Amino acid sequence: MIGELYEEALTGRRVEIEDGAGRRRPLPVDQWRAPRPGDAGLLARCAGPVLDVGSGPGRLTVALTERGVLALGIDVTEHAVALTVAAGGPALHRDVFGAVPGAGGWRTVLLADGNIGIGGDPAALLRRVAELRAPDGRVLVEVAPPGAPSRVESVRLRTGGAVGEWFAWAHVSADDVAGLATRCGLAVGEIWEEAGRWFASL
Ligand SMILES: C[S@@+](CC[C@H](N)C(=O)[O-])C[C@H]1O[C@@H](n2cnc3c(N)ncnc32)[C@H](O)[C@@H]1O
Image 1 (cartoon, rainbow, N blue to C red):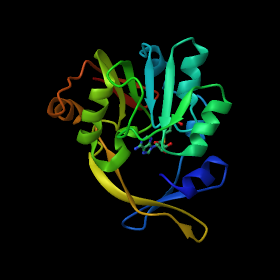
Image 2 (cartoon, rainbow, N blue to C red):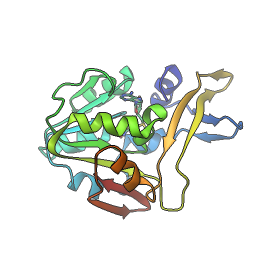
Image 3 (cartoon, rainbow, N blue to C red):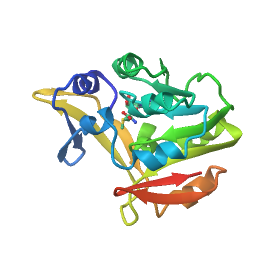
Image 4 (cartoon, rainbow, N blue to C red):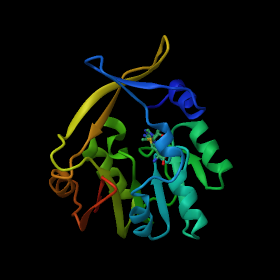
């Protein structure tokens, strides 16, 4: 995800994700650029201030800001942060595992678009975002549909002859999110589906 090829994808170049078995699928950057079916229920559950972790080009940060909800996007990709700021959403170039402003005070932490996969260790990520949220705050996480396997895969980006570095990405099924949350000191409040996308409030 991270790196030069992801930045190129954000500029409109067709980039693919390749897994360890050599299977390739398009990186769905277009889905992250404009409102997606399923966003409505997610946005409606966001109480500010909201930290949008891995905010990408920023459609959720911008949508919240336009609604008057205080929101901040953070992303390790500088170009993604620049796109968010240009679109009118506050965003910072930050790693979720590094120093994040307002730690311990975010009423909602968002892990949308499969961002539970960041770092390839969903338990480490959930423990980290649990530290970032306010004591009465929630983590809203997009998960894979029931029946889909939870797994960690090694993937890399490629376009034409160029290939990026391998990195780990995780997938968590709706079936497994409650057990994972419990191991991280969180609890599932709600699981919902909208437009074929699955979400959990922790
Ligand atoms: C699936 S895309 C998210 C798309 C985004 N939700 C949107 O609305 O456009 C994953 C994003 O996570 C970012 N990311 C990856 N590792 C990260 C980390 N450790 N901290 C913050 N952001 C990270 C990537 O740069 C990428 O923009």
